[in-house]
Image (tube, rainbow over all chains, first blue to last red; front, side):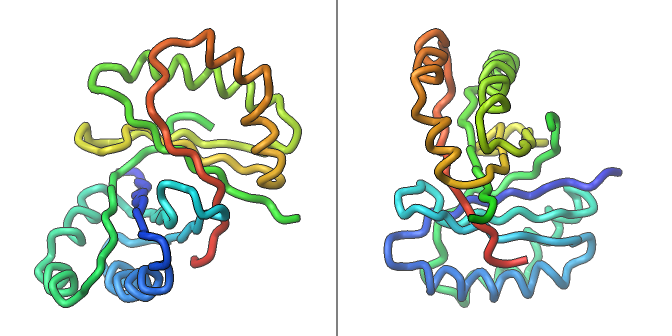
Length: 98
Length: 98
């Protein structure tokens, strides 16, 4: 099975970047510890008018590993204990053109 | 000036992937020829329920180079001569966490 890329664009309300980064660090700690996690990069928009102020790209060993990480009880509890989680649109991707 | 990453998520309607890829190739030919362009990768969602079926990541020498490419008369003509261009949300990004 080949590696996959998870891309997750976040709609961060104006003025909420600090709070969003704090949450990102908290959730990143969880994902990093999951089986199949390889690496991730957090992208921040240079200009304030971007629709998605933050976008994560992560590499995983497989879509199944990521799905398992996404549906765990541990993540559910982490979400329930967090406030102001920005809307996001995660998807699993493969590179088809370079 | 350091390199920037341009991320562009596309909302591709169901069944329109072939048409969207054809357009992507057409526009990629334009962007590749512009000053400051370095490279790009096209990501396709593995599952059909992803909000953004296609996402481009491109590297440019600077935000100014990308803005110049985005506002040229040549691109304007290319867009005017194209149909069914999917909605997209391009932004210029820098990596702030790895």
